[in-house]
Image (cartoon, rainbow over the protein chains, first blue to last red):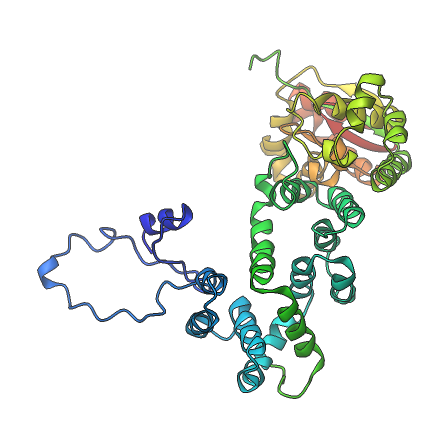
Length: 234
Length: 184
């Protein structure tokens, strides 16, 4: 993706999406290859429909009421790992497509290992009582103090939120300020550059799960963690 | 900034149990959102105590940037109280160049163990959040590491610039754990 595509995407002006699983970057036009003769260029092939589509597009389709299109996008962009396969399986579960759920469950089970997805779902659920089993399991999985505090800090319950925020301030002050500014919109507080990368890495998954519908993802997650049939580990 | 205006590094004898106790007390009051007790702990006058009572949570005030004119005095009170509870001033450098010398003087950097101890002493990530100021240099070392640092510095003194020699001597004279800060 070129610089201007990235810039457009950053500012919400369209352009192709970055490949979330690909760290590589194509060389920018005009760099390294010298001047190219447009006449000698090979003919362009049809671009597959999936090119440039993202989880964001799938969520937007769902929000527009087109769950079928959302499932189609998730199937196109799924590479068998990460948030995409989780949301793809959740969408299948929601539609009662048990064959697809069973097929995807082993990959979801891999994603469900560790504490990260548990806390993203806990944070997306918001309600402390609903989030509690996920947070407890994340604690058993040795989730770091900042991650647990963050999940509590975005709770719908004010006391839980305050305690989470205080715990976060005492365990990771730059992240506490970033969460207060971005998640809680606390007046005058500003995000800290030191913490924005960590914030983005965790918050993207949580916010996408929330937008998709945290309850369905929560059901899928527990099934992937507890149901061994159809969930063979890698 | 003029040479005179540049911050200068100071050393403090650190009472670590007292600092930990203060941190626990502070956290407990934030958790309980007990604003009168918090105002009393920080020694706030009536005006600042009223300010602290505003808003949904006391902790929100301390999530603001220090540059915020409303929160700035609250941060200053917090640091003043922490200092009173757990820090005893031991020495202040006259030379603004000291930090740069400690971080870059070749002779110090050649000894990786010595350089690592100096870096730890100047690493703000190891301090509680309320002692860390934006743009300031700060950090601490436990007594055993201070002694290690003193032992490593002493034989080099003849070859070190005067500001580092003064630092080395002051470090030897400071008992226990040591905190370094240039804006406390």
